[in-house]
Image (cartoon, rainbow, N blue to C red; front, side):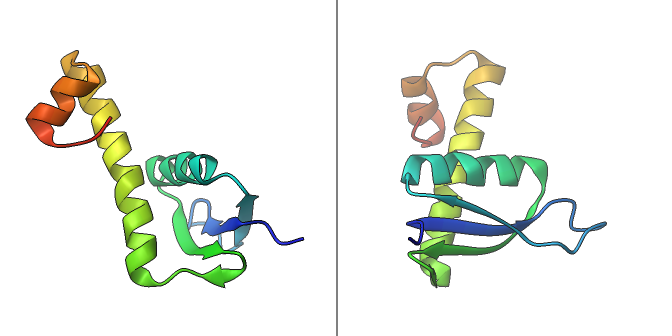
Length: 94
């Protein structure tokens, strides 16, 4: 059975060419995994839904949400703000 979502990625792309795949049926877990890839500097090769690669607009939206969650968390931690204050000041949902 095919997983609902899969991400193909390369860890340490400057030293490695091997493509790994993470599979999940949970969209929240996928978003968390994308956040970890962005933080670690991994190269994201493809984001797939039910075995079909998502188009650029869909992938961009998923990555934008993950990046906004990272930025929101960093701002909240660094400035000692709660989620509502981060949203009000910076426009990022927490």
